[in-house]
Image (cartoon, rainbow, N blue to C red):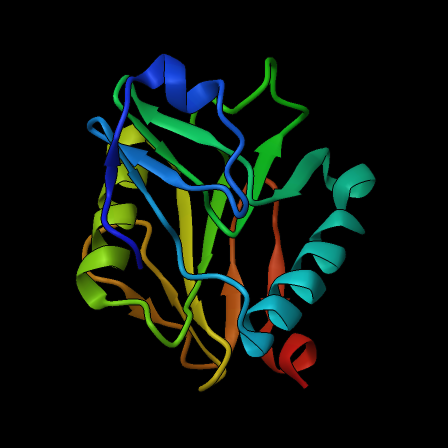
Length: 167
């Protein structure tokens, strides 16, 4: 990762980053992206969830800016909202945010992201490691491993069997 760059919220929102970057308290922070396992799983997960949009009334997008607080924007790997968000980026708590681990992700970095999502009021937060085919529900308290390899939400009910998407 490169050194963080300090800019205003306005400059961040008017700049195109490739790939898009997080914005945390005035700093533009690069994200770990572009690894084969991560990219492949993200694509398959996004396609699976997109196939549920009409049936469940959800809206799914990869790598969408989510304003978690006035001075913080995160780019989750997959964002699921109840209906299409208003505006250019998400400002209301999404229904589900998913982070897919990359080889270079640290526990501290993922925990910071999860903490931001919880503070925003996101009801469902998943962290998935495609290398080990392990998923955690990080929605409240300590992350809980999906021992059966299945991650779930309720209201609407989303069920993701990791083995089917990682295989």
